Image 1 (cartoon, helix red, strand yellow):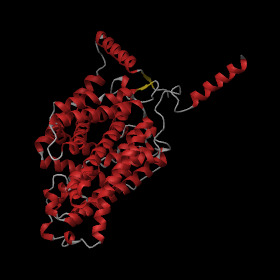
Image 2 (cartoon, helix red, strand yellow; image 1 turned 180 degrees about the vertical axis):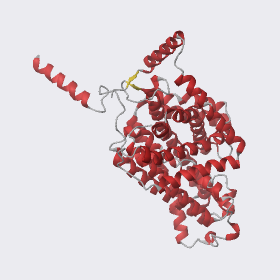
Image 3 (cartoon, rainbow, N blue to C red; image 1 turned 90 degrees about the vertical axis):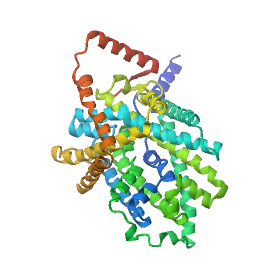
Image 4 (cartoon, helix red, strand yellow; image 1 turned 135 degrees about the horizontal axis):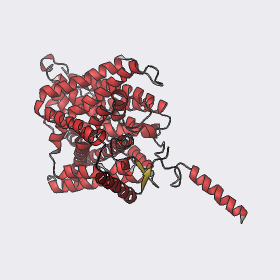
Length: 487
């Protein structure tokens, strides 16, 4: 029948033109809207830290007033970094974040060293740590008032990591929808602290703010360490830049999402700390193991059992947002020839970079059960700031070397200058305060130099080795049902 045949063909054409259709063009879709962009940034910045331990800043700043100043200053400095990344993200419309910007400004060798440090240690260790916090807090209400057994934490953590990997492998849309839900959960958790705290403050509970700026208590020598803790609490503002290619209208969405997110996060952090100080004295806060739990016990009674659940959901949101971002960096690095080709392939039906999502899974679980993750994070914390500083320095460098590059969003030069100096200051602070761990981290990253020459530059592999690698690549491609993205 000619008519029905024509209708069938027309239906097929409609199906193929539908961006969400499994039969459409095999590529990463532009599904990150403004709301989803905000949820990625807020959802990865607000982790367990604000609920568990704001005491690092209080301890090193020496007074209540000075600690609040540090929280605000770190928010402003992080906004400077975020605005610099907004310019980079709108002028270089590639996903990949730090890796892509270092590649564009300083070339492939520097970018590969960053990627090498990320893939062998930083990302698996970071994901394992936040996952461990999830495992600890999701089980705490069940085992109260006893401690949670170590093996139970690791099993719960493994389930958490597996579920996040599965979600990111199956659907970009559902990953983003769940991220929005978890971000609202985080903001609700923060509101349950801010609202009762401010209510008590307006009722006249101000005794903990008397002599807030007592000069004798302020520790000028500790302020750099307080800033280090604060900047760590705000880190995560750069994750939207890892998925630029999937952002709708990035010229407007990226700067707007960054500015809105940083305003919300800074307000939440400062008001949460004001609420803590309204209910607890500086001494009580420093003595607390989990500040939010102590706060809830003082203000909410039995409802305090819900706080660990909120913290666990917060950690899950951070895991989800981080994995979504990391996988895009590996996807872009593979496309540039710095990682195996299969990592830049897309699932034929799901339209997700499946191989790039699951590459971290074995390493994360391995570190979870074997490695000393916290010491590894100490090795690597300074490398994060070193390479972010280098990426922002690249913005200044490209202003002079590539003046004709289109820049839809442009920041005054003093903003990236102040931020990159702050990053390098924190790097030198690490070298001074913890030279052994920092030195080990630096040595681990330097192994990227011989790796670059072995895996990238030296391409005269024996035929049998190249044949084996091609065979493995094809086998993985068939098993995972992934094919090269269509451009």
